[in-house]
Image (cartoon, rainbow, N blue to C red; front, side, top):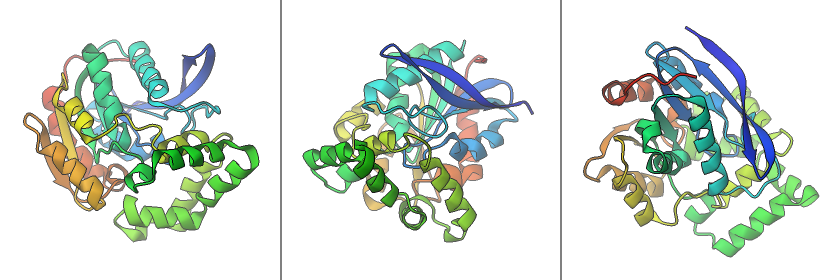
Length: 297
């Protein structure tokens, strides 16, 4: 099995270049795996799935700009920025259409990629898809969310606020509530690894944008449903059976659409990592049926 790690893609935005970290494993038709946005977002979350499809596909995992091991500049993180990053990566790295597995909030980005570059995608798998950030989901007004986002950008106050929300205790609480269903997996070593992701230079800017709704790819459910309905490529939605009530209702609304294939698996918002084997096994028949000619790096 061919494994290539710690590669960097050079992405240009406003006349500056930024390094985007990515890995590849396996050979064959290409599947691009997009980790969900979060405070601890990292391509390592997709490693389990990548390893399980690598005997039949070339799996490519990447860290979004501002997350994981990619550069984390103090930019105004917004959908246009990450859309451009994803489009540039796909255009420059692949010679043939690719299948995309998008987790959580990146669902909208994958769907919009297919809308804008239908020739670039063969199919899309959405795993526990969401479209609205945590604070908007909690009902926090936009002006207050914007204020929080600006506070986090301040050098001293912002760093202190960010660190208070990335303590080991807070991370374990959030994982136990919304991300993992099996509490025994939240070992001290696991939480330590997650916290290390939050301690990189510039780590607070992109996560703050996500948490406050700045990275929401659409404005409301109607816009997301319209985007999903009009997908020019086949879509499979994998629902999380133990997802929080609001998120589960949104996923069920997606699954109810005609032409959209769907299935439900155990897990909650982090099912793509916690239940990587089950999710990969469920996605493989769809990938096998829908992928076309090989895309190569």
